[in-house]
Amino acid sequence: MTRGASKPFGPSADLDPGVNLIEASAGTGKTWSIISIMARQIAIEGCGIEQILVVSFTRAATAELRERVREGLQELAQHVELVRGGDPIPSDPRAEALIPKM
Image (cartoon, rainbow, N blue to C red):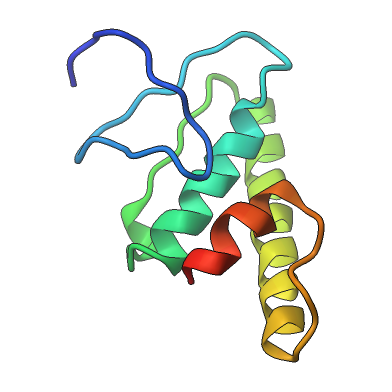
């Protein structure tokens, strides 16, 4: 991993192969972006969840991140099922960015 100019991250961000670092201040949307990137890697890029490692600094932060990732992936899966059943894509930024690419 090399440190260079920072790039925008989110559901549509192109990641470099290998290790990627997301570093930002509190309240900037890191967790939302991590969930979105994981969802894209799993659902669109075909990456197995066992191939993704997300690390945080404390056990408490890791536990919160684990729960929020689980909830975010479940919510997206529910949106996908609704769309497969004929409903329109929900007005949700993650769903709007990812579902059309699935």
